[in-house]
Length: 305
Image (cartoon, rainbow, N blue to C red; front, side):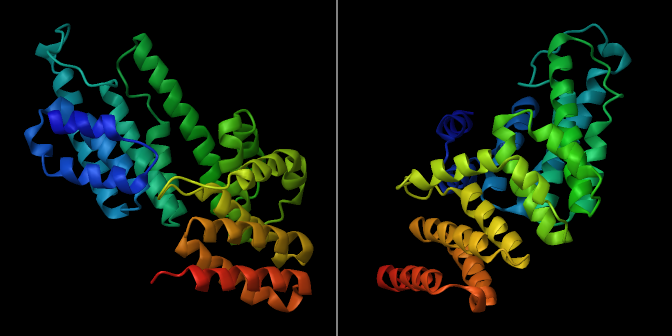
């Protein structure tokens, strides 16, 4: 229990450190009681998702679902009615079943399996079976319904349903914290499904420009903490514009995103940017080609391997 509490207290923005901490607790799961294990499974699954350990995360989410189902059935046995349980988890019991499906939908999304992500989302969108009516339950019911609403539109969009884009935009524009991640997913869907989204990019051009200016101005990041959204968003934007012949805009996003990828040594994204540039380099201006070569020369000079 002490190790688990230390793990929770130590969670932070460093994904690798979170995974290392999760590894220390993972082997102790069976030593926790049933209720504490539910919350441990939730936190461990989140940590491993950050580290992109998809199979392990999905297994933990399944274990959480199985455990919560058992506990929920025990709670509603006839002889348990009106009896106060000895110990409660941090969330209402139904939440762990719903959250398990939410996590598995996110994992499927990350793996590009959007149809399966949609099925998991349908599973936690329907919570009509929940028996409790207290205030805390209602709070988490509304949370889950909110996640499901935007996710259903997202996964429909990612499977090629163009009609879902407008509804998805209505969901994300209501929240400043969801706007940029949502726009990133719209542009990614546009690239994958060959959908034209110029209208939405123009609608939010001020927000996108402010986000890029803010992230670009951040010169240093603490060790191992990378601005993933900024790098990936600029990659998708550059891909979108280059594939449509808007080379000036596309290459500008490409150079800015590639520069940040080099700055934080995000090797997987660097490879994606190099591939995109090489695919379109015949359309690059001399100035753009000089910027690209400058970045590549810097990579070789700073390569410690």
